[in-house]
Amino acid sequence: MVNADILARLADTIEARKGADPSTSYTAKLMHKGLDSILKKVGEEAVETVMAAKDGDKLHLVREVADLWFHTLVLLAQQGLGPNDVLAELARREGISGIDEKNARPE
Image (tube, rainbow, N blue to C red; front, side):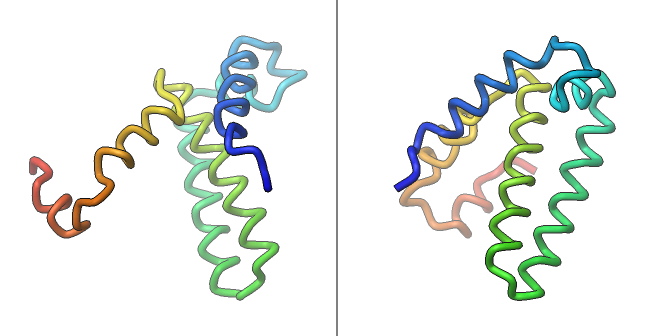
């Protein structure tokens, strides 16, 4: 079984690399390029995830989801957030019908 703390450890690594030299850290390079570059990577990875799922290649799908999660964690860090913020929201929604939860959102 994979350690469930991997998201927290990865978020810590991303935080530590935010201010690193962009020539030595992919995360620092993304952060240095700014929000638009990070958003572009999240979008690219989301599309690649969809394509892998449509192809039916489970290993490829897992790898693309890992890329998507990583880039989403970079986005969260850039916005001053982390995986615990998302996990808290998921916990808030637990036991609530998806339809009810969506209908309760402000417009």
